Image (cartoon, rainbow, N blue to C red; front, side, top):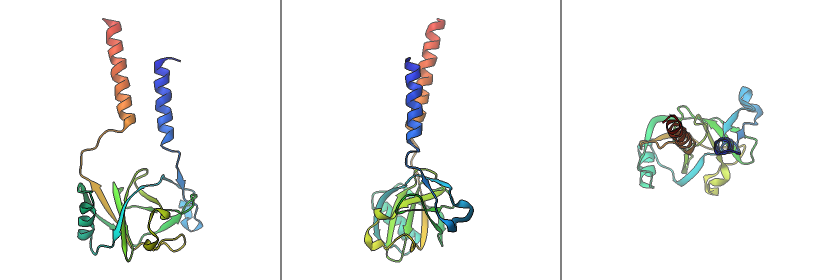
Length: 178
């Protein structure tokens, strides 16, 4: 197997690996969304006592080590949840594809990084403390607040791999034509 073939095989494997933990809505109440692919689990980051306003939510997020996150101006309520094909995982549509989202109920906040399909919030309710009081069938989240990261984005590893491969091929092409 040539080095180029190995590189393409590595690239394909890396791309497929990102779809391993796919989550699909399996909820008869979802109507046309039943069976829809909603990405993979978003990353649970922190949890804490409820904040009273979007300003206090933003302050809480920033004071917990996420100083680059800012409220996007979008707060979604009420939130419609859907059961999925994965035990204890719920999904809900997000209005503006945020980098991060905060869920809130009567007593707690929890912050998640939005990883996969950014128009969906997908999380495992067992990541939250029991005090958060969320269970399948009685999803008690009052609203979702969206946050975006203001830092400069860094290219994903697959992008860097493609750029690197292109530079190698360009260098090889130049040396063979010299």
